[in-house]
Length: 554
Image (cartoon, rainbow, N blue to C red; front, side, top):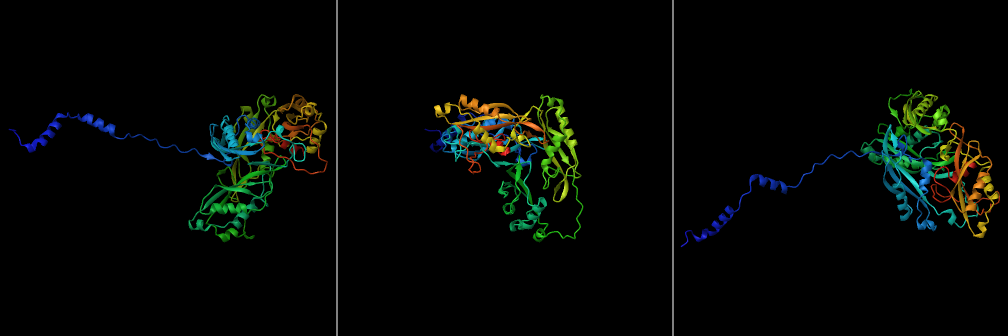
């Protein structure tokens, strides 16, 4: 007989199971619970993003560490894709990137492409570059946006002819495709800065949305003043929204034709940036009104703030471009520069005060103690400026200027001189010389050879031809004849620096072989041009291109 009721069996079995299982210690239970809980990782607060500046916002622009000429040579090393070598595609790839404070190039991208192959090669070329010298703002290295044009053009030796009319492939041009940010003679609004301010006051239409939302502030607009003078490519650099950005762009689009900028005597495209103020304190009728003639003119208000960019920059001798010549004229070269032991540029900044004095001079990128001291002494010797103005008030403005420290034996690149060297008689005489004096090597006819030899040479300070070298060969006898032709040139008119002193400068010329027939004098014919920066075309990237050579010789 069972000692307990049948209905209680399940209950007893459950009890036995529970007592048979050993209980875990409390500490072990806690460890198990910890293991099952999701892991928590401590997160560090994100570091603030490093600001990236535009070129117009820095006092010293980034530069290739070995200089402009080395950059030109580097970009010539682009590997031409098959479609470029075959002549099916040619043009320029614009690559944008950021130069970091430590000189690294990051954030590379194709701003304007050509083809998949050329875009990839342009990116490879830029990404493989060594570190640059960074841009500087307020004496500190900063991240700066920059862009380069990498040109892809069919080599001359593969061309069937040198020009549409059979003439020499030498390039002659009076304008450039390159867009500058600073030139010797900056573009000017018709009537000057005050006339432009009057145009903006008169034509500004305050957007209804901005008026409703009480939006005020400044819209910074950049645009290009091309050789034609009509502003193009306007874009908002820093906006405030509510229709103000669009209104600022309309004002730029409707501007009259400007007087274009000039560099080395040539009209060029220049990037320009202006602020356009939107203020509700002044009614639209006030914006359109011209101050009454009888109203007394208040005395200029002087501010303590130091600006780096103002509506009316300080000028010397009537132009901002007069600063460099004045510095070079006041410069006393140290002995180490005169004997060739040290050379380069010293970047100095100083403040132009409301009374026109240059003060607070200091070196932001130097060479040696002697060079730095000489540069600062040149700043202290400057005459008084016409001070800068902002909103009609004279203000203090900080300028950053390079001071060239080069001895008498230094050879400059074309873009480093104020006046280019020129062949006697100009570009036409140079073309005639290259055609008439050429002794065509027999191998040209014997082997049906056709092409061109590119020669780089130095025009010395006395106008004589100095060192010569072959940049692009054709054949041994062709190269020897090209060198003879260049070495036998008559004296040139030498290049001159900002102080008006004659200096040595490097030039390049392309000599077609066999010589193309010269068009009759007085005839007109289209001129073959290729983009600046072409690694194998007529013109080369930079100032020592044959394009610069002929335009300077005219």
